Length: 46
Length: 446
Image 1 (tube, chains in turn purple, orange):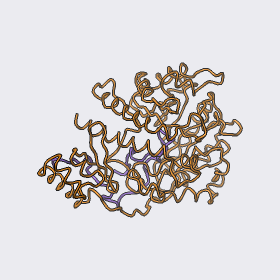
Image 2 (cartoon, rainbow over the protein chains, first blue to last red):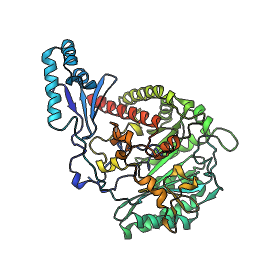
Image 3 (tube, rainbow over the protein chains, first blue to last red):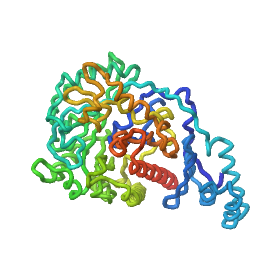
Image 4 (spheres, rainbow over the protein chains, first blue to last red):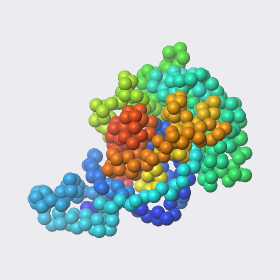
C-alpha cells in the first residue's frame, strides 16, 4: 500500500469466541471518574 | 460507518465496526471525505488535482480495504457475553472533607447529608458483598473515595487488611485505589499508600490561581501550597507504581492545556485533566458555546504532548491521550456501557448502594444496601438497557466503541434521560480520540 497505512494489527471482531471475560477495569474506576472511556483501557484476557 | 479527519497534517480514516485505524494520504482523504469516490463528478475533480494514475491507485487501495472488510465494515450484532456481576466498588469512606471545592458533586464532602465516616463493619460487609456478587471474576476494584478518604485512614488500613485476607480463599485479587486532596498526607500515609494502593489519584487543578479559585480550604484560603509539596513527596517515593495527578477544568479555565503544562513542570509524569460534570445552570459549567475553543485546546495539548517525547525528562502521560488500538478491550466490553449499577456500585458510610459515585445523595437512586444487596430493580432497570447500541444517537456515532456511550450521570444531569448523551461530553471525547490517533501516528513517524 502506498496511500494507506493501517495502524492496528487486529480487528474488534477477531476471536470473538474467546473474548468477553469481564476481567478488565470498570470504565470509570480509574483516573477520571467523570467520563466513560473504554478505548484507552487494556484487555486482561491476553 | 467510517470517520475521516485531519489534524496537523495527519489524515486518518477510522472504520468503526472493525476498529481499524488507517493513516491515509491527502488524496485518499479527499476520496473518502463525503464518500467522494462514489461520485463521478467529484472523482473527476480529484483526478484533475492529483492526476488520473495516482487517483486510480488510491481508489484501488480503498477497494482492497473494502473487499477485505477493513473499511465500511458491516456492523456485527453483539450479544452481550459479559454477564452482569458487581466487581468494582467506590467506597465513600468519608462523607466529610477538609476542603470545600466549589464544583464538588459531593456538596463539599457530605453528599447532601450528614457528615459521616464509614465504619469498618460497613466496609467489611461491602467487601463480602463484592466477593459474593463478582462470581467467577478474579479482579476486584475498590476505590477509597469521599469526601476526603484520609479523614478515615485507620478504617482504610483495616479494610485493606480484610480485603487481602479474602483473596486467596476466594480466588480474588483486590486492586485498591485512593483519591485524595492531599491535605492530610504525611510521611506515614504516603508510605502506606505507596505500599498498598495499586493506584492513587491526586487531586490538583493545575496552576495555583486555577486550583485555588475552586479548591479552597474551610477558611476560604487556597489549597495549592499545602498539597503540592505533599503530592511531590508522594510521587518521588512512589517509584514505578501507577498514580495520576488529576484535575478538573471548568468554564473558568478553558485554557486547561496550561494547567497540564504546569502540572508537568511540577514534576508529575502521569496527568489527567477532565471536564467538570455538573448541572448546566452552574456558572462554571461547560456549555455548547465552549466546545470549539476546547477542541482547539486539546489540539494544542496534543502538540505539546508530542513535543515532550523529544526529551526524556519532559515526556508525560495524559490519561485521555492513551489509546489501545490492539491491546484494548473487546467489543463486548466496548458495547455494554460504563457498568454503573451492573458492574460497579458506590457505597455510602451508612451502607447504601448507588449505581455510581455521581448519584450518591440523590436518594431516589439508592439501589440497595450492604445487608440486603441490590434490591431496587426499578432503578437498576434504568441502568441495564443503556448499552451503546441502545442509545439512538450513539448507535450512529463513529466513536461509539471508544466511549461506550459516555457517562450516565452526564446524560442524566443534562438531559434527564440516560439514553441521550451529553453533547459537550461527546464532542470533547471525539476530539480526544482524534488527537490520540494523531499522536500515535506522529510518534510512529518519529
